[in-house]
Amino acid sequence: MNILAILTAAVVVGGTGIVIGFFLGISGEKFHVEVDEREAAILGVLPGNNCGGCGYAGCSGLAAAIVKGEAPVNQCPVGGASVTEQIGAIMGVEAQAGERMVAFVKCAGTCEKASIDYEYSGNEDCAAMAYVPGGGPKTCNYGCLGYGSCVRACPFDALHIVDGIALVDKDACKACGKCLDVCPKNLIEFVPYAAKHIVQCSSKDKGKDVMKACSVGCIGCKICEKNCPVDAVHVTDNIAYIDQEKCTKCGICAEKCPKKIIL
Image (cartoon, rainbow, N blue to C red; front, side):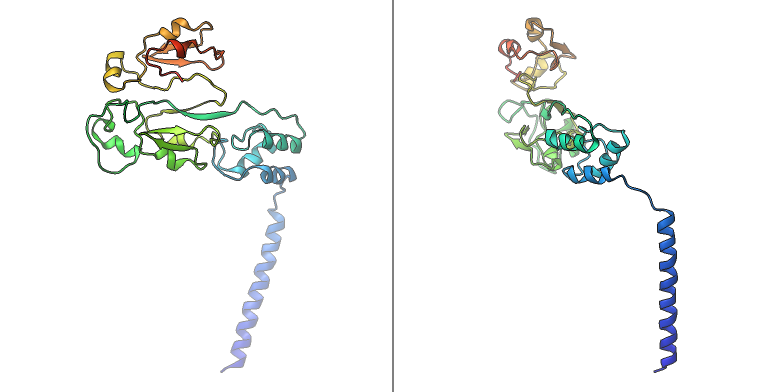
């Protein structure tokens, strides 16, 4: 064994390591970026789900945006009032939590109530229905397919398939928006947690066609619109829509609806 060769190799490796370490140290000082202490504090308060519901790639992105003044302190939909209050304290501002929103599935076409054109057996994924005749086995082309793409996308276990349609657990929902993104029928929307009356249908077909497809679908009869005392209900494209900001929760629309599709 050549001792001199071993020693030479050791010196070369060690020297190379020292040189690299020296340049890394210099580079670290030169390219060092100061991080606002508030950003780290906010990141420690945020729930850490990195769900993207705030509109940023993750919690770190939101924390940086809040410190820069590019996002409000109540931007996190998951944290709620508690997180908003803590972030407000860090930023030294008075924090007001926005109205809590939750996801809502605009379909009541359960297995018993919705008609089907054929029996389907295959890949149970809602997006895959785009390649299936009629966009799925249900007669209604606007209804929930019930194959659970939204359920699998939800990081909070707030959605479940019950009797052929997706239902949202309001208390578990954090309004992250992942279910909205994956629903190919665009059936899911955000509504106020405290909303009392919502139209659980999204069909734009004419009344006679709706009745063939679903026993509880909105037929666009405008009875709800005519009876609303505060002009909160309007029928557009054969489907009723309730303006939650105008709605006084009187319940007249739900009482008058002949299809009982207003919750």
